[in-house]
Image (tube, helix red, strand yellow):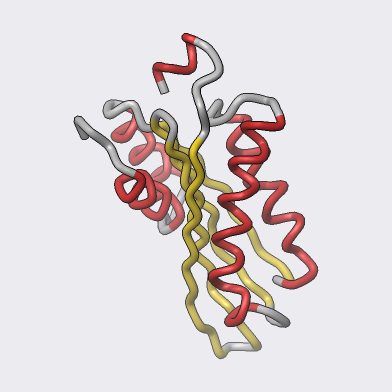
Length: 147
């Protein structure tokens, strides 16, 4: 990836979200790191509507733990905004149901994307839904320019 666009980073976030194991996450993360794309993923499950705040919180915490965003209102706001955009895309399908799946996050430079990949279920009748959100984060210091 010489000149990376938001669509490339969205693809990386989605690829992290669709992983089926921690081992697969690690392999893909290492591949992307060679291209200066930092990634993270976190599992999530529960009642969708009452858990929207938890989805956003988990996304922000995962992004901070993997150093995708600075611990500031700018970094937290960008990743929370991208997560909220992804949630809005799946709201109609998931509202009132339980969801289970994964949140994928990817960043390179000023691009950060959050992808949600959830199974939406009632008993054994499951549906699948995907949402992706993007935000831009300005560089705050010289060390962050390596992202």
